[in-house]
Image (cartoon, rainbow over the protein chains, first blue to last red):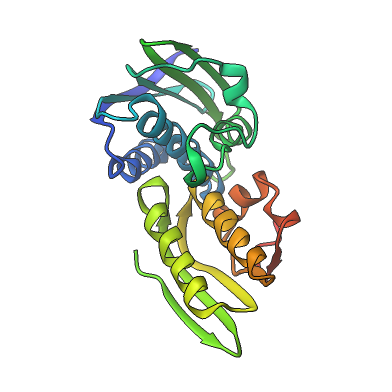
Length: 146
Length: 106
């Protein structure tokens, strides 16, 4: 698929940047003319991924979070969220709904939400090297567009 | 995060406001817990009318409040949930754990 537009961002894993990442992806996605529901889904998925970097990748330190987004031909938003943190020991376990190592403040629903709110979802991780999440969301083309 | 609340006849209503994410959830959770502990209500209502965004951190806020109300043998009720938070809560099956009223029916 042809890349029609892209953007790359890097920011430290500070929790104040969760809302920044959501706002940034919503602005970038705006050119696809998404519905409010579609923007809501995309913001939620990005929020979950960035939160995971902050809570799990760098539990006791601040490290870089990379957010890359592309617009692919066919009205598809392609998002990569990467960190260079400690990685995930057991991905299968991490994907299970309600599983968390984050304690009472976390629900264990982050990955489940990313999977169900996006059209495509994949995750790769190497212990001690970092985690990368790749998601795609097709935006429905609506009538009345020029 | 500003949380406003009022109590009447042992019913506590807490109006949540703004964006509920990992950054803001801890404070919200603490505030809700403190209010429940202080007023010991029979019924606690969380009102989501002014919540502009919520991710899975909000699920933990609801579950925490539910746990506290269960220890008091009281009820938790969620109301006025906009579509985006509602979808997140439904992904976790919250509607099976607590009563939702005047929520989005989508």
